[in-house]
Image (cartoon, rainbow, N blue to C red):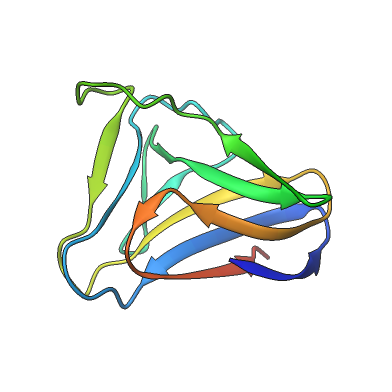
Length: 115
């Protein structure tokens, strides 16, 4: 998702109003202590989603979670297979950026600045 430049701050990215099966890849062992995963408005302790953002024209994987061939706490599918659910991630932007995205399947992404 691309947009006008945003200043360094704390942000929240959310997937919502999704049709069909979908989910997000991440982990369940707090690889990114500056943020957390949210499912249906509730924080998931020690969980993070893969997230990238665009700084100075280059996409950077801010929350790096290596894809594995097996599902475990280091590579975990945060599934939201119900159209009423949302899946989000908070993150700290340390530089101005003009794009952000979760590594997900399907859905609508929205980003908001945390207050």
